[in-house]
Amino acid sequence: MSILNEISTFLQQGRAKNVKELVQKAIDEGVPAESILKEGLIAGMNVIGEKFKNNEVYVPDVLIAARAMNAGLELLRPLLVSSGVKAAGKVVIGTVKGDLHDIGKNLVRMMMEGKGLEVIDLGVDVPAEKFVSTAIETGANIIACSALLTTTMGEMKNVVEASIAQGIRDKVKIMVGGAPLNDNFCKSIGADIYCPDAASAADEALKICAG
Image 1 (cartoon, rainbow, N blue to C red):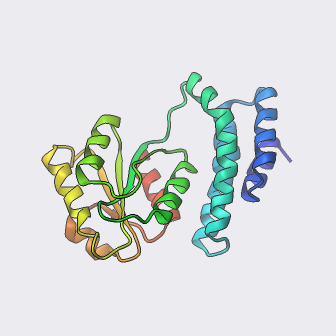
Image 2 (image 1 turned 30 degrees about the horizontal axis):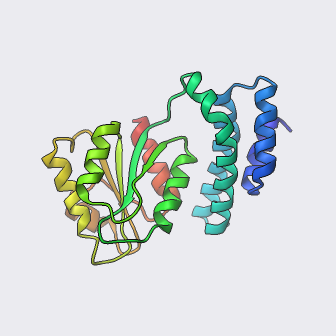
């Protein structure tokens, strides 16, 4: 079994200590940082993402796997930067103004990072203007908004309108998600994509950035 397969396997098992040790070993053996990232860490998170979609693993499993991935990433980050490896794309994510729920948002962030995307997490209770100004500053491809309350869903329309007002609506895709939402709501506010779960959101985000 190759060292990259081992990294992927330990990551799926959530064994952060083993992942970290093997990533260091791979670096010492001269394996390119990008290969370790894509064929080890991202490959492992892809398996977890698929299993999560199919209800074969659950939220705690994803959190543990993501922790293992981050343990490996800590060692890789400086090498990826120095070798000029760029993220697959940039996403600004947050829970909309008036809403303090973050479990769903955090899962989406982890799944997106697991696909090799750079995610700028604004946290919870984020005003529409903050989503848009951050997207402008960072040159993000996507704004991803989360809401868990029916009373805060309307804030997402404000994000769409703020992006129009700031002149970036044609440059950025707006993705929405959360328990009370559906595709009809997404269309009605003029957003681009509704995703029912974290794994789908990560897949869609990667497609947008690759496109």
